[in-house]
Image (tube, rainbow, N blue to C red):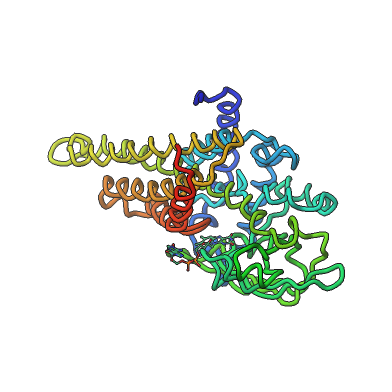
Length: 410
Ligand SMILES: Cc1cc2nc3c(=O)[nH]c(=O)nc-3n(C[C@H](O)[C@H](O)[C@H](O)COP(=O)(O)OP(=O)(O)OC[C@H]3O[C@@H](n4cnc5c(N)ncnc54)[C@H](O)[C@@H]3O)c2cc1C
């Protein structure tokens, strides 16, 4: 194993950060009145205002034009195919540099595997269908959402009530989805539905994935779901009322939708872990800088052992997380099994960033609670990450199951 970072990745990271600092930060500055307050960021209905959506699209398209947006996507989809190790390195750098709460950066400059760009799930789409939307997705013009969860089916995906029934060359989908990231703004949706009751009841498949345009008759997003104190949201509820989807728009084989979905979920877990690592580094940088200038009892607080311990604990957390993320990405690049490792990395990085954000706030005292420093935004963001893409408990369940099945080597 060689953890030296190849110069191409470093150059890519440098160029990406130059783009963010020059162009994206320039736009943020120009539109600071719009982006600076949640009262203008979102409309009355909790959705991003049209001006914000237009800016996000502009950044996506510029990122694509410069080659960043698709660089991490699979080569078979026309992406740069840089691989998992490059992806985690770049995600970490971007987040460590930018910090939290930047609506024109997160999931916009680099796509999330679920919602933007050339998602790995698209490998399961009929090439002729993919050809109709490939350019729009690769250029950042259009975006997607990934609808697996429902009111009664989160951790327990087989509790799904959405049904797809075959009708000639089509499927007719009825049901609803909940917590779906980007659903209020997406042009395309990947929707998972039960196609075989018996298999689904026995937890032996029976769920199929479909790809559709969100302007298909019967598809709607009746509401958004603001979380963690926000006035608006990226996540929404999806209603599916007799939505007719051609069989050609199926994602993978009938009844095998969960393995299709896992392609997105696994890429999402690793990318989320790398973002957590980057944000934890950002928070530690803030804490280190502040601890050396803030004085109490006649000396910088960095001289107090209690503060030093908090800094050291952040470093211990970050180093452990970084080591395991990079090792897990290496396993994936080597096409080695990594089911338990992906779960270990997802659970531990999302928990780690919460601890680091918490200590960074503590080191800042009252300043840490102010909106201005964005540590509180990071803290709220970190808290949410223990739930999507499989909760911490579900990751532990996967890890334990793998151990008990004999996968106990590291
Ligand atoms: C911000 C955000 C974005 C999301 N984006 C998407 C998206 O784009 N697409 C999508 O399909 N879904 C999305 N989700 C849904 C997310 O995947 C689910 O919320 C998650 O899987 C948990 O499901 P749940 O909320 O129904 O909780 P539940 O499954 O009801 O779990 C409740 C509690 O019980 C625990 N629990 C459940 N089962 C077990 C068990 N067997 N053993 C131990 N503990 C257990 C859980 O860990 C949790 O603590 C998103 C969620 C959030 C919050």
